[in-house]
Length: 260
Image 1 (tube, one colour):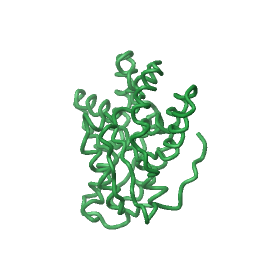
Image 2: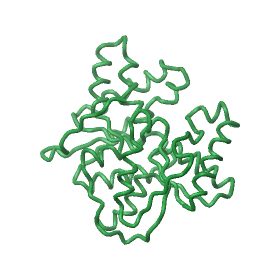
Image 3: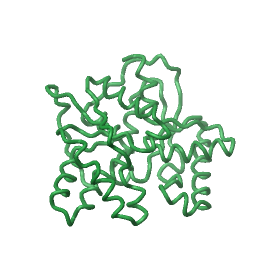
Image 4: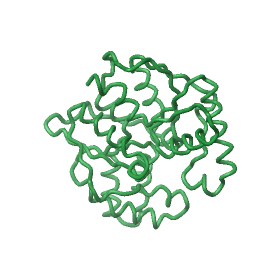
């Protein structure tokens, strides 16, 4: 993963961004998408949500179906036509768009050029909040103190480097203590279609993840990836584990929104 050079800040003369909401947020966690919008608007930005957007194509791509992934990406290349940042509240989806969309069109120079230009404008939400907006969460929160554990998806950690972004944002929140757990660097077992093809292995992995999180004494796990949250949250509920899950955008907004 190459180091990324960030702009000095948002364009104050043209304070617009796009939100790529992801299909999982759209279908299962819409509040996380709305909280991402609220966080961006808190910083004075106007957020645009192109209605034609859908999936990033990662399920098809990781299952060995690049033609299907290419069709999904191609249908969306022209949706983000203005030169505005594209904010994605999911590290794995952001990684797909930033690193893999351009390679899908190696045999189509025109589409490849569009994909490369778009990829340069793609930011994972926590990355954008930290390195472009330089958000300030130092104000006193009316929320009670709480301890949380952080989970970063494999794609977010390795392709977008967003674990450090999540750590920095959580550590900047008044009244919040982030506790590291023994299996933090390990996959939760979701892995998109991996959890369907290898459900026994996936189940063992998420069981280990939940046990490690609960061993810290924390009752809340925060992550910026909804696929992981669905997997961990449903498994914890099924096991009767005392662990709640929350998207990073919703957690941040809950802590700072009332003070905005």
